[in-house]
Image (cartoon, rainbow, N blue to C red; front, side):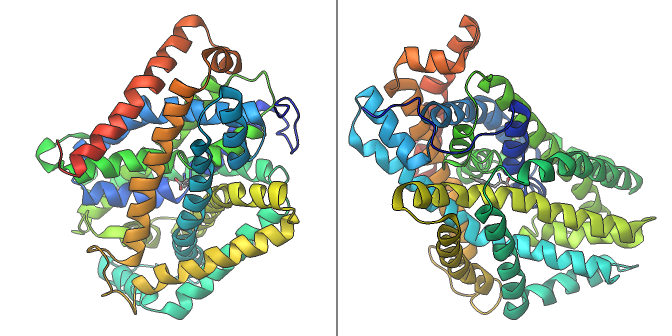
Length: 452
Ligand code: PFF
């Protein structure tokens, strides 16, 4: 049997460094771009409630499990699954879980990078004063004209991919910790200022109402799936990103506590984004279900009319891009770690190849917003299909398998030793990971395919 105590790759300098990096992975476009628009598309309050329940009952226990698996093996996700199945004497097919994660990460990054490209382009738009005194209609035209141009989208997508790959090529520990350390507090302050702006519109309570008062008649099986899928997406779960970060975590650090901190920070940023955006939506007679362009059609209105709006707009989009970068690097890290550790690639070569493949795939998403906007597969555009396939299917399936592995396959004494929790805390986690999380995912899937 392979020696499980032997570390072969780098480690975080402290627990705080791990929290920063994992929060950096969790907080990203998912919180500020995706959460508001899917909340708008799925009717608001009831959707938000389901999402919060999923974070609490499924997300946090799985985050603990995923970190634990990575830390136990101290290897990339594919090797982690190989090693831990060997340790547990389990079926070899569990290896595929590591593979699925690598593939899901690259699929997500392909469209994530396109949207992060939009945010990058908006830094320039903010800088050149495009939002100044613009009304909702002008801001919408600005957005529509932008996404109609494949050349512009490809340019910004390429730039973002190059930036991601350059950071990943340098290795995860360097630079990243520092970037997140300044980013998170700054992003938080800016979100609070946007909330203050939203309070000044005449629709603040209408926005809050939409977000927090549940109307269960708006909830469909598919919106429950979207809410659950988003809990995985926003917490970076189900594909090995947190597993790989956990593998850099020194032994002897409390995993459960860190999971609560990360999930708490992540949820707070998403809710603040919602609280800032929906009042602007209603105050300008926009539609909550405007889709992926929602933040790009609302926040610039605020920047165009508020005091210091010019600086705030630039800062906001710069921070959104950095938040996206700290997430995107975690999307490729499982693939790169595997190519380096198992296939003998240099870090640079691994980055070039995974970067090129992901970039090429991203062109499908670029074109789905313009030239191929009428191309539909299963009733969805390429972007929608990739999003559905990853966030609503691959991540929940990955999370389900992680839960089953941690709850049913891994020996109790191993998870107990790794988590090192007080007896009651361990018992609670064990019940959630063994029964609650897997059956919740399972029932949501059954419901969507119409069996229930
Ligand atoms: N959690 C990131 C976000 O909310 O933007 C996206 C993400 C990163 C998803 C890493 C999955 C992942 F493994």
